[in-house]
Length: 463
Image (cartoon, rainbow, N blue to C red; front, side, top):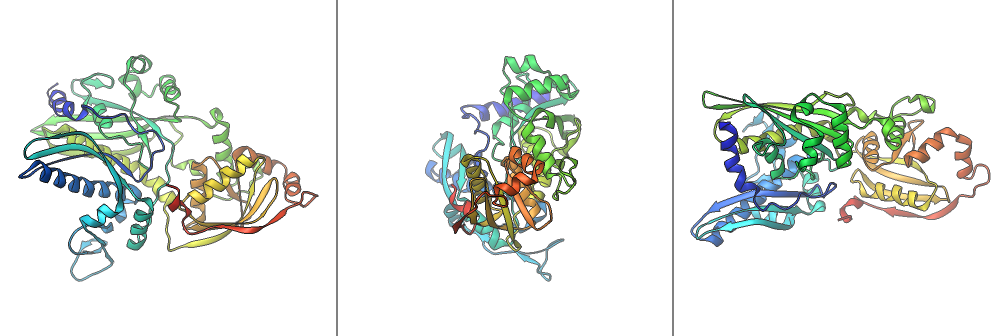
């Protein structure tokens, strides 16, 4: 119990007066509740220092969130001079990429605002939690100038059950579970793979225990998923040992539950539409099997990491561990959705819809994703539209982005692309004659329109 008691003493102060977690789907350009503290000759000076240091920490968190680990050494950062890096690290003789230097003034220009919580100060000290909000268009521009591909597409939110295992037993809902508290200190709804911790109330404790969570009890995990309206539950298992003045921590994110395709018709159709050579549609479809990111098998380890640190500050270790495993978990998703502005393709696309609401959903999804540079509507009918879509990077990544927004995007011949809601996509594949009718081949008049264009990263204006 020594480890837990010591950790809880530190966490108690951090948990005080923390506002409720952000709702799922919050802006990925928001870095919530960064812990700041500083000491100076006056409270005002300490406050300025703390906010400046917090802003530096926040931009580092944000840029790492949007990019893959291989590019982290080349990310823009605060410094007087740009540093040259090679794949093996900094050198004076080999120059491969140059790091863009950031000043504190530049960081302020990137920021759209900040919010302060639990602010406390004395004559010469200051500490608080600060949520920093950054301008999406400015951050995108910065990464483009740095030549670094990035992603800002989010998966669906998963529920995390933080189970701590020590020599004294298992902890989940117990008040003396600092691992659970660490997940609640800073919300993770703004990550590309958003996660949320449970309330930990009486109902939670009656649904599932720590032992059941580790045993991946299907019934109990399904009930938790239903209670929190999520399609996936992840068990965050932390195994903590203390020996010779050191903490040894192993953390694993385990896929405890994922809603099967049979439970969700929309998901089922999306999986069938995006799966290469799907039998349901005659094996003619082309595109990646996008469900490879979230393993369907219960018990699959999504991310794993080991840590050895000096004993005494478990909250800091827990925060570090969470950041590391979330980054590992997000890596496959980032690789599927990275935006590389050095490559662009002009796609001929047909949109299918049965109602104006469906068309609005398709149009909104296309012009809101940063994977799309422009959309030009060339013709329009009651049931469909012909478009030219400028897509950055591998067009297959657009399949993943559209699926994340509940749409099916596919190609049958590798040249023309098709987009629709899942239910409409199923009908399109099920009746090619009806599809032809809807686009004028057998009497349905297609209405030419003056090309409407939504140009150059339309997502810059959606905030």
